[in-house]
Image (cartoon, rainbow, N blue to C red; front, side, top):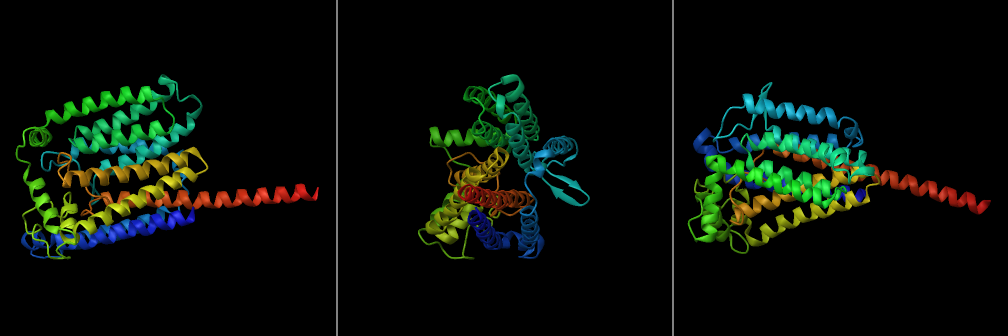
Length: 379
């Protein structure tokens, strides 16, 4: 288990360092034009990375069992923050997603996602003896999913809301909830999310543009077009670090949501595959940590954190390659960071702690069994 903890730590470190290099090169032009300093955005990202690294270290030492007892207050606080976001968050690009408290600006959806994972893991363990009970087991958990995702959907933050629903229902299914309950609720939530997406003009335009490009061969939006040009320009081995042309204002959000395209241009197909490989290593390591955890809460918490990182990486890469409609989701650990990289690192710290503590528990159990066997032999 400790080997898995080291694997997760160094794999995350590689992804973060890769992100630093790509953000530096992808943001230099717009930083120079907008802030008269080519390092402005990189320096901002570096500060967040340093905070994220500190958070990762701290949370890797906090016993994960603590979160079980405080999950209810935590989920209530996250809901309050999401309500405040709807009321007080300034509208940026048609949506209010950011809160500023005490000079610290953050996106409550990032912390709400992690807290929901913790709360669902705690509830699934607590209700493990009667998970087939729709009214007393499934509905209390599903209500928290609806409240959290619903408050995020109406910001509007459609992609985040739908992914949080997907993560939550997957955790519930893995935790032992009946498939019939999962299927019917997921169908209802997806239809509701789709209806909300079609209400808001920016999300409706993205979806219709994507559908038109698939069915009728119509034009894709500018970001996807330029992203594909960027990826195609990279070839097999890439044009080299710092030699990207698309980051010179051709590709919008080159250092953010579409950073994978710049990564592909600079590092080529080989470099892109290597980055995907590191996400795969992180996913497999996290699943193994979940499998070896000795308590259900630890198992589901490890699975939820791991699955959430993997699905966000998958969706971001799918968007950059034109496979999914444009969503506005960052590439975990690599995109220019707001609060995303901090809360992702918090999740990694918790994952490492699950691995380390269960390794100690396993060792203690082995010692006790050996002592019992020795005592029996002497008797």
